[in-house]
Length: 312
Image 1: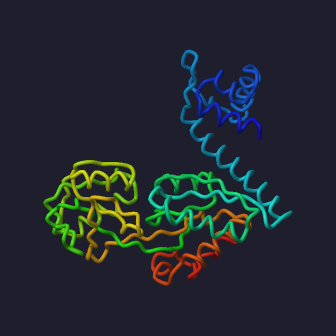
Image 2 (image 1 turned 45 degrees about the horizontal axis):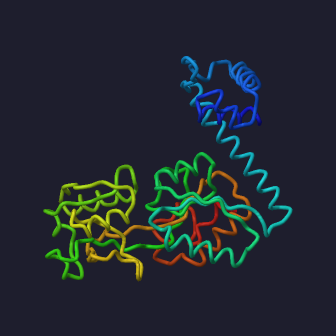
């Protein structure tokens, strides 16, 4: 197990001295450990370039499985610890930037009121990164949108968010309450970058409306888009703002297009057993925040309205 941990650090630094310093090991000890691991797998894991190491294709395969193995061992230890004290344990939760200011704090506050002994390891990321974290075993469960691709990730929908067109407050369209997206076909758009999931939703919505948006800016956070809309750089498709969280200088026009919504839900790796504390957390979130409209067609196949059959 130590050698796998050391290998992961070495792969991340690609430098023997830096890895030894981070691990508080003597460099010869780390070098010998790497040699033993390479002999065991029967292939070099790094290309040696002067004083640096560069992970080669064999090393990339080893890194993927080493991280997964370490995550499984950590999960086993957490489950064993939880069996000793069901009221304690750790939930490793990943969540979207766009729900960091409302849904995630509400989820944490509600669950901590029920289980004050439970701790959280929190990771803020975009949707495709959350899927990667789940698959690599770095997190137990994710609050994300839209539903991740892949049959290996199970899913249950929680909250259906209406989408709006954000326009500058002095824009000719600003006096309207709603509109179809096609009405903004000639406007410059500010959008999120690929491969962020919300960008995919925006592109699909534009395609359904029969428009090819002229992109003025691509960003990484919805709040940035709203700020640039206020500055007059363009218009943007964004979630309907929560009360008191609207960007000053922006008018939000509800989109009447049939697909103008996104589903926020819980995602987890279907085949990986969950510690009881994670199952308890998922049950709480689904009971507290799930709605009949949020847990219908977007559920994973084979799950009921609570979506928890694979979480126990």
